[in-house]
Image 1 (tube, rainbow, N blue to C red):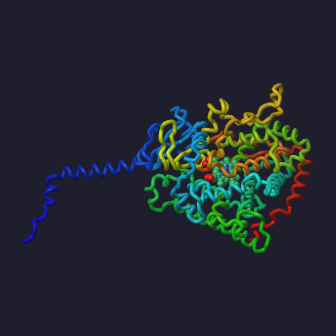
Image 2 (image 1 turned 90 degrees about the horizontal axis):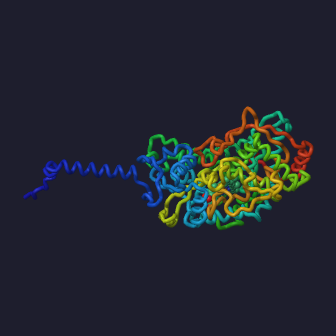
Length: 555
Ligand code: HEM
């Protein structure tokens, strides 16, 4: 005998309206939670920026320039700290100077982590490991940061004097040559020399290798690939990091581009390491991070960690230093900037009556207050990493009573904080090195000047707290060494047909990149004392001609 079957069909027919209704409600609930869901629930007590839409959240509203959009929202709504939704990721954005500094310094342990992103961590970094600046906080990151910290420390700086001397000399050597031996009527771009300067210093540090030619193929390949990768790190350029569905679109162009860049980067990193191996074999290697590790002088780090440290140092400096120094020279060469150049030159002469001493000491000490002030102001005004590097909370943060849970993305709007009128005064939007100085005597407000004593963090361009920039010391020394030689050799005048853009937002030609790339401009170089300058260059040549003679082209 057959057991009676449950009459599914009849039950469904009788209740079809309810059942279909339930399924539809379920599907709608799923769709809504997919479209509005975020990794972290809305945080009570912190306002959310207006204008979020399903799936994308604020991504589309933020446009290409996240720092400027957030700066505008802060001022419109008078809320220096607010939350936004980047697709499925909730982030808290800090905008005012005080808010940025407090989250990084007062809560330094809670925001020690960095978020992992699909494109950068999952695709681009799968072969050479994460750079320090993109590593989540763990024991490997701690070891890498420690090793980088030792290589970039104040005591280590002395070992790099020959390299500072050589590289800053090469800027002047080629500016002189390419301007038809400092003919004041010739106009040149200065960024290429500064790019080579920045890249060569970190390549020397990591591999004991440099490239002499400003337009060397390998040098340009490293710069090109590095910049293209930097473009792939920003939220505005990379929606697939926050809207996972976009990853599955057919012919995913972002993935293909990332893989191509990854293999090009692998090729030059391997070439550099092979060159170091070969130099070790021949006994011609220079003291550098990778040689020390390849020779097993440092045993705690793995091969991937060594690559990652070298990659961090190379990528840490090759865009930030040219971005800062090129735009700084852009401000100095304008008609308004001439007064700063004159006062800087007067201050150089006050400390070094003989300009030959300024050249000789340029890389060993930083004692001209006016130059230090120019560097401080360039760092503040041109915030080359406008949204800094993202952080992630590891523990709860109590922000004025609101609880930001662990694993929340923290965004520091350094551009907004650096131009905060409530902190820097009504002229926060103006390039003025003298904000960092005071006249030595009250009667003479035209100088000479001395440094103003700082009672708090100067600006936010190097970040702050436990994960602040590891390269701040060396970066400042590089900027100083180049600037003192350039300003003591030339008066720099902006081209009339291709002048610099000195707006603190618009000077940057790629708003979506992680680090600003200044728009190109041209200058004329008027020698201050051609004979002394040529003498200084000749002795720099004599001093440095035996350093780092190995040329990568000989591989
Ligand atoms: C003007 C030049 C530079 C600027 C404006 C700059 C800016 C920054 C910023 C904003 C951060 C993130 C800080 C934070 O999260 O609080 C950072 C991190 C870092 N920078 Fe720099 N940087 C510069 C030069 C350099 C140089 C020359 C090097 C190496 C030779 C370097 C190596 C690093 C490293 C390794 C990190 C990661 C630190 C970590 O995550 O623990 N930087 N930098």
